[in-house]
Amino acid sequence: MSTFDLIIKGGTIATASDVYTADIAIKDGKIVQIGTSLDGAEKVIDATGKYVLPGGIDSHVHISQPSGEGISMADDFETGTRSALFGGNTTVLPFCLQEKGTPLRQTLNAYHKLAEGNLYTDVSFHLIVSETNPTLLGQELPALAGEGYASFKVFMTYEGLRLNDAEILKTLDVARSTGSTVMIHCENEDAIRYLIEKHEAAGDVAPRAHASTRPAAVEREATHRALTLAEIADVPIVIVHVSNGQAMEEISRARARGLKVFGETCPQYLMLTAEDLDGMDWEGAKFVCSPPPRDKAAQEECWRGIETGVFDLFSSDHCPFKYDDERGKKFPKGKESFRHIPNGIPGVETRMPILFSEGVMKGRIDLSRFVALTSTNHAKTYGLYPQKGTISIGSDADIAIWDPSVKRTIRHAELHDGADYSPYEGIEVTGWPTTVILRGSVMVSDGELVGKKGDGQYQTARTRTPNSL
Ligand code: URP
Ligand code: ZN
Ligand code: ZN
Ligand code: ZN
Image (cartoon, rainbow, N blue to C red; front, side, top):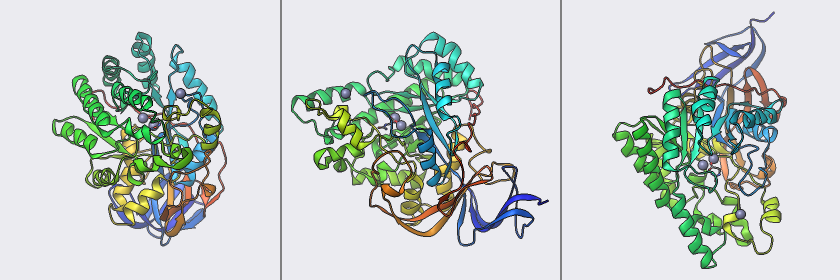
């Protein structure tokens, strides 16, 4: 009988702190030894010349979530996690959206049902709080936090979903007392409404108007307000999908005042601009997300945030809608306005290859920073560390083996999500995760799927110690 199930030999291992060459031995889904000249395994993978990294953790993805416009998302748990897996991820954190008037647990059970038996990666849910009532705040959220649902997202925008400042404060209060982590979507809804009405009155209804009605100022103001509310409630928060330097400045200033704040940015803010929304014949709808991509200067600001540590998290905000479906259903005669385009773009599979190629291969960040931004910090922020997010003895054997010599042009036809386009079509990248291992099981081997639907498992998260980090 072999001592180990699997040994990964001779690769360059990178964690958030170290880069070194060694072998990794795996038994019963866990990393049990790291050393040189290890042997005695049933299966050996030669990783010479490759990077051996912790599996990616994408802590911001939307799967099977109902949109406000009644359009279905293009990914269910099967296609969403399959796509994530091929992009080097072993864990994703989608959202369970609270349905108004329905007990949160009921909705959560429905999400679990959708996920069960369909996962290619491990999954852990965030809860979206869309209304605050005494039962939710006083009973449901505390009970769920105790069961391992330790993070929730609140929105300052989107009619029907947004919370006002008083509601956000009450929610932050629950986070403080339960040790949960709150993600905040920061855009000023009233200012956006004002701008939308002006644009529609002027007949300016093309997709590009989506970006014009959500300028950086609405994000900056809401970011400042969210940070102020967190300061008053005395609780750490995550500012999600930051798109530009003005919002980054608010984060830096809050940190200087002593706030515990985590910053997240996404590939769209490095690779796209508002001009992409200008595509002919509604093609611009393919790039509609909130906050919107901005300009080249903002892209450079976000890169600086990635390099200097303003950002802790690099997530996809994968939120896929089919372009063709969307056109058929959403733009019937008389309804052709940007405000009916569902917000969100796909990107769970391309998140890490884009940052690896543009960041690591172009010398903007080193491998350890890449690992921190795409895996380790997600596990730490959302209560999954060190089971997830690192390569160390006792951790889950969630590993992606990257071949830095692979050159690929991103083509949606070669991706594995359920959408019908990629906003990054045609972008050339160097480096790709060619082998992906989930809790010791090889799921993708040299680019081929060998794992099965259902191999992924649900993971509960740990809360923070209330009021501390
Ligand atoms: O446009 C976006 N980002 N859609 C996804 C939902 C959200 O706000 O994260
Ligand atoms: Zn959001
Ligand atoms: Zn999102
Ligand atoms: Zn509409």
